[in-house]
Amino acid sequence: MSGFPVSGDEIAQLTLEHLWLTGAAMLAATVIAVPTGVALTRRPGWAKPVIGAANVLQTIPSLAMFGFLLPLPWLGERAARVAIIALTAYALLPILRNTYAGIRGIDPTLIEVARALGLTDTQRFFKVELPLAGSFILAGLRTATVTCVGIATIAAAVGAGGLGELIFRGVASVDNGLVLAGAIPAALLALACDGALGLVERWVRVPGPGSAA
Amino acid sequence: MSAAIEFRNVGFWMAQRRRRLLDGISFGVEAGTTTVVLGRSGSGKTTLLKTVNRVVEPTSGEVWLHGKNVRDAELIRLRRSVGYVIQETGLFPHMTAERDVGLVLEAEGMPLKERVLRSHELLNAVGLEARVFASRYPHQLSGGQKQRVGLARALAAEARVLLMDEPFGALDPLTRGEMQDMLRELLARLRMTVLLVTHDLDEALFLGDRIVLLSEGKVVANLLPTEFVHSRQPEVEAYVLAFHRGELSVAEEKRA
Image (cartoon, rainbow over all chains, first blue to last red; front, side):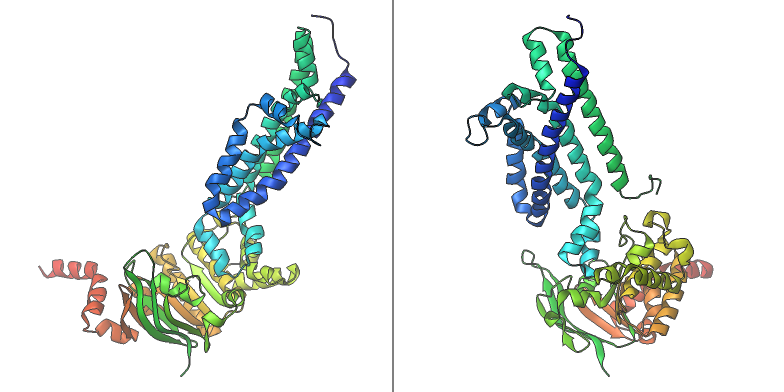
């Protein structure tokens, strides 16, 4: 093991890159998967094929996914684009599935009451369905984020940067210190995201017998 | 006399199943009176109730409300103009009593301040002190209190018609009695037209101006409460007798 192989500045820089890749992918995945999940609750017949397709995306090995995307025009020009698209693809399933299941899981009586009271479809969604399914949707977001923080380390393989840089460099030069310098911050980042989203999740949870509200 | 709610030969059946849930239902509910629809589980009472605010669309026949066919009414308007109370689970778990009661007003775009004022008024009207109960969630309320909130919500839109589906079915007899007293007093004051569904004969006699007995989707009797208890019609008699089994058996034991 060679002394300490990398400066704190570099780790901070790569952590930021890592966060950017994950954050951008999560944003994109949320924007796609939440509305799609909601749309599926309106047309449950489509749920199986669409969620199935997201499931298939999930099974593609991450290294292969990055590899597949590289030769594509426009995308391949920038490694970060490839990484963000790939991470988005992985984040879709948990968000989509939880959005769909969260809304479908609401007590049908409550949905009927919302209709009977004369709420419009939009009002029913924002005043009833979204708040009741909120913590469920967030749980999906949380799973997706943690997964993405992990997978984002592989983005370095296509030159997209992030903490994976250090890991790949460490593996290439058989330097465990370097591997750990990438792996430990990545693990901490995953824990931090999990913790932060856990707090948000608790905040949107529906008050019930077990809660403090 | 004008009927506020009128069923004209209403039928309902599911495409897949042969059985008719409702079959040729015709009767009217006069404005300002309470009609109780009585019947055993599966007799079609709830389905009938839901045709009024078009949560269920009848397969045949027409439902008229205040002299207009509900099919021609604008759906959202119609539903907001009809109060709806159901058994137990009707309150939203993520809403305080105050918000739930004011939900229809919120949907109508009434400003928050006015809305809160109105919800508090309504909570007080159903016997829940707003200062104490306005900020409570359903899980912090007893069964009777929940039903009071549900009732307050149904009154919020200044509905003239109230649909009640087994509103007190899940309550213990003493609480149920208190609720019935409160409801009767409130209805007399507000002069509302009420269609109430129950299988409880006692409730029907206590609250109903008329009692309609439903059996297998058909109206088998439409009587005044006094007529109902003395009717010699077999279906009615069977229903009345079913409610006095305990009493009769005790009386029998005494005699023996």
